[in-house]
Every structure is written in C-alpha cells, then in structure tokens.
Length: 202
Image (cartoon, rainbow, N blue to C red):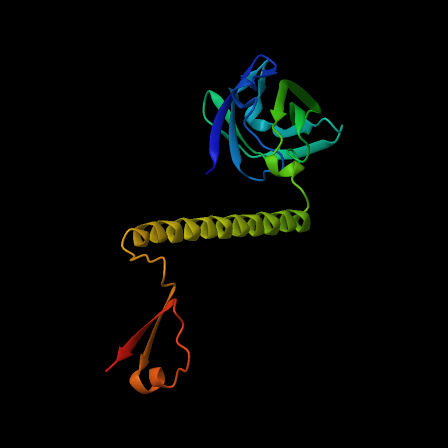
C-alpha cells in the first residue's frame, strides 16, 4: 500500500515532521509524498523552476531525485517518491529541496529537517543458509518432543488398561499358567504340570 503524505514549505523551511519515522531501510517506491508551496516566493514564480530533492544519509551518501511539478494560480505541488537510494542506510536522512531556474541562474534552497530511516528487522537477520539450518533443528526438536509425548501417553494408557483389567482377573496361588489343547494333546503329556490348568477343547 502506497502512503501519501503532504509536506508544506514555510518561508524557506521544508517541514518534514509528518514523515519523521515513515520510511524503512531498503524500501523502494513505497511512499509518495506531495510537497506544497506558495507559487510565488520573493517575486519568483516557482512554477517556472525545476525542483530537485536531495537526501544525505548517515553514511554521507547523497541521493538525488528530480521532482515533477503541477501548479495552479496560488500553489505549486511537487511529487517525491521515496526510492531505494534514499533508504539504503538506516539512521538520519537530511532532506534538502532545491529550486533551480536556468534562465536567470537562480537557485533557491529549502532546508528540511532530518527524518529517520527506520532499520528493517531483516537487516540483522542471519544468512539464509544458517537460518535454514536453525529451522531444520527446530523442526527436528519439535518432532522429537512430539514423539516423547506420544510415548508418555501410550505408557499412561497401558497403565490404565492394566489397572482396569486387574480388578476383573481371577487370581490363584496354585495355578500360574492356563493352556488350551485337544484331548489327544493332553493325553500325550506324560507329566502334567501341577501349576498349569489344562482346558480341553472339544
């Protein structure tokens, strides 16, 4: 979404406070700013001037943009689109608007205040390959944790089933094994186990 802000020129000051914290590092064409000024300044018709926006950043690099102009009987309007050369570095950005008339060799400078190019959170991110490794490690840790949870849940379920069955089992001090077999299989046993219950299947 393009944000459009309007700045005013008062005397020879460009009032930049409305966009003090508007832009982010690395943005390009994200914000359009309209600058309004009285058409006549000190006898000069500003609609006959060409306008240039300059921005000097914290690395002392200068960005320059020629601004398109429209005018009516009382005002001139300039369109400033914030491009990546103005947002290349985070920190303070000093804006200066210059009006130049090559016909009579006149230059008028409108001084703007500093605005803050706010650091993009992605500026300080880890390199992509390291980020991918960390993401893989996190996914493996989550999978391991989920496996542990499932094991714990299975153990709890088994314990509960064992408790439920324990109340319904028939217990004996003399029998510890129950075997089902046919009559022929039973007859073939030469020495039956005293602690085994044999169930003859018909």
